[in-house]
Amino acid sequence: MENRLQTIVNPLLGWYKTHRRELPWRVDKDPYHVWVSEIMLQQTRVEAVIKYYSRFIETLPDVESLSEVPEDRLLKLWEGLGYYSRARNLKKAAEKIVRDLGGVFPDTSASLRKLPGVGAYTAGAIASICFQEKVTAVDGNVLRVVARVTGSRENVLLPEVKKQTEAGLLEVLPDNAGDFNEAMMELGETVCLPGDAARCVECPLQGECLAHRDGLTAELPVRVKQMKRRQEQRTVFLLTAEDGRTAVEKRPDKGLLAGMYQLPNVEGFLSEEEIRSAAEAWGLQVLEIVFIKDAKHVFTHLDWLMKGYHVKVAHPAGDFLWATPEELQQQYALPTALKPFAPFPTAKKKRG
Ligand code: ADE
Image 1 (cartoon, rainbow, N blue to C red):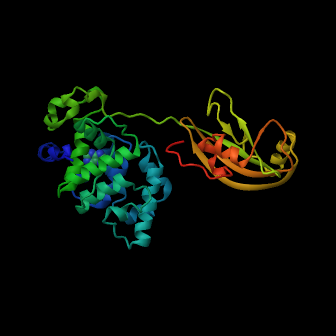
Image 2 (tube, rainbow, N blue to C red; image 1 turned 135 degrees about the vertical axis):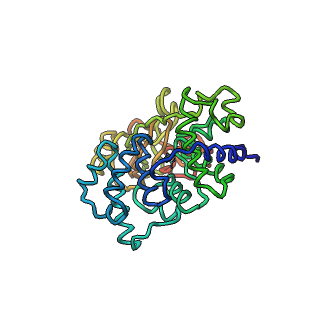
Image 3 (cartoon, helix red, strand yellow; image 1 turned 180 degrees about the vertical axis):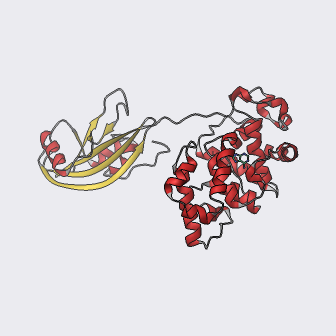
């Protein structure tokens, strides 16, 4: 398949040659400098970072000095940047480099990723800028540029969309991957700005950009926050009587899993004593309780975290339907959520 991103490589690199900003961490390509700047830039704008960066490097000029700095001194240097775990991770990583790597900075994205606080983006940035490795460095700016150029309406907050973006860029990455990566970030920070702040008239990629062509620049990229699903703990009862029948019940006609048959279950993780009491309250004579397993089922707005127990009882009783194994297989459609506890093999379903 043709990769539209191929068309942006030359115009982008040409633009970067003349428009790249002189930033203090660009003077040399020292990995320590690039690393500190990339960590600072993760949650803070370039203009704000410059001052912090210069003071940080003057005070702690190398990995050794960072590894030895007392924590309160470090946090003072970081004061105002926020997200202090970033600073603590910097020190931890410096300690690791000094202690385990003989003070030598890791020089591949894979080895960089083993440092505390260094994820795919930071590792890719350092490896491509300082060590010319052909790897991508995809941050929010790059996701925006790519979504617009390709006219993609996919949700850039999804990990798989980030992966697709990385794969698409990797295919077209030139030998000077560091320049390409920095040029993408720079374009996202200074020209391809979010929403209607985009300055398309200044953009070297205007001619290749599908969002621009279709008037979608302000709408892209799509960023849909996933709703936080409620987590519900449930105890599931596989109740079987000595005659071989199993208790099922019908769910209400409205709401979650409306009208389906289910194994009895209650909210919360019950202890074995509580399970016994519950079963007795349902009019059952409990013979044995055996834990089956833990299982999880993901609904749209809700997760069920389940613990299933096989509760052997003497006789069928209570407000349940007592189904023979054949009836269970043929008559009662158990929801996928409960199949981990089903006492019979079930047909594979595409989705739950
Ligand atoms: N934003 C984060 N890192 C950057 C870099 N290396 N160049 C330009 N902008 C950036």
